[in-house]
Image 1 (tube, rainbow, N blue to C red):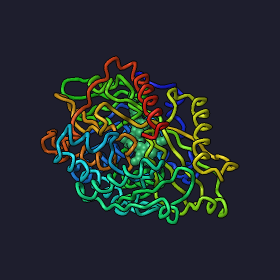
Image 2: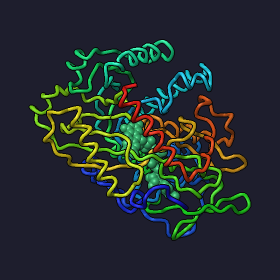
Image 3: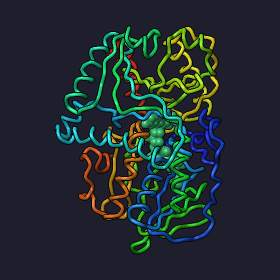
Image 4: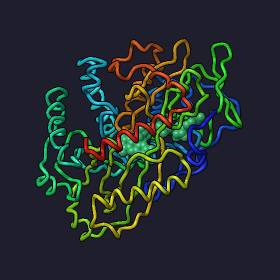
Length: 448
Ligand SMILES: Cc1cc2nc3c(=O)[nH]c(=O)nc-3n(C[C@H](O)[C@H](O)[C@H](O)COP(=O)(O)OP(=O)(O)OC[C@H]3O[C@@H](n4cnc5c(N)ncnc54)[C@H](O)[C@@H]3O)c2cc1C
């Protein structure tokens, strides 16, 4: 199998040094697969998608399921994201979606996105997960006066077309309830939306899965899938599983070669996060930073940030193009500058944590849920950096498909269904992405 980035980013054997890892010491220390076994279904990947799919297969269909995870469970993006439960999971506008799929499918897509957010909230409660839920809505912040009109229009469409609860705040109003700084020109809030500790969330889901007798093997990377008659044999370094159905839930960490039909369709993109030291009350007050709700701004290459419960600021944006530890460090230094440009009174605040991970994008610019034609191989990926609300829900939808083997049974918007197109000259994927970033950087500089 081939990796698209530097090998530093695929070090499955240990977790990244994230802030979250310091808040949660619980490790499951589950066994590695070292023998040849059988199961009705095998799920590859132990993040929100894989775990949710496996739990639903056991609870609703009483199937025998095994989950194989290359690192510790939750090792991928699910344990190290920003913890923003936001929506929708797309990098394109509702206008574009309407043009491509029509008004009804777009409406359904937003409806499903909201269901996703509510599903995340429901499993936090139903599985008794303590994951530090904060905030009651999400904010989209106008980073330039030009953008205020855009968020006002967005609020209007969200309300009238999709029935989403929104509210608009002028610069002065947001200063009172949100924060100040040099790039704050009003905001829009929408519900549902909240922040979580993603590691506590994925660990909570894992605990629940184990209570339902899901067999999970950690440190077990699937490096080959062979088909023998109507069965699949998933081969790992020290063992194998013989199964009738395979679920691929590897999202941005998908490695080319595992499933030929999935190759060249995913663009893994690095997303980086930095977290400051704890800020004093005076420092927080100097920018009037009141809210604990997640915030993202209107830049094309957006910044996302939130105040954590111990008064640190978590700040994220797109990562570098290489994936080495060195490029990660260099990117974190740039991000520190971005943060301090918008909050200049924090120029002396040090950064305690920086890490990164992979999100999955595709030419569809929306998630992909489905079944490989003429095979019993199922997939869900491509949440475009919005997986906290969409991946657990997508895992549940996928479980219905795995059980019935018939995608017609899946009552979700067409926007989610099926594989995205392949990239032309897939080796140039990162180069294409660089060009897109260059273009959006220019747009951001011109504030358009
Ligand atoms: C830095 C960062 C910040 C983010 N912030 C947010 C946010 O604030 N809000 C939001 O909604 N989303 C955010 N996301 C995206 C979100 O985390 C993902 O969409 C979501 O976690 C995807 O879940 P998943 O289970 O599909 O994939 P992952 O959690 O990535 O899990 C895939 C798993 O597959 C395993 N795997 C891969 N190959 C194999 C193999 N061959 N054999 C066995 N196992 C394998 C990997 O080890 C990995 O654990 C962020 C992502 C990153 C990287």
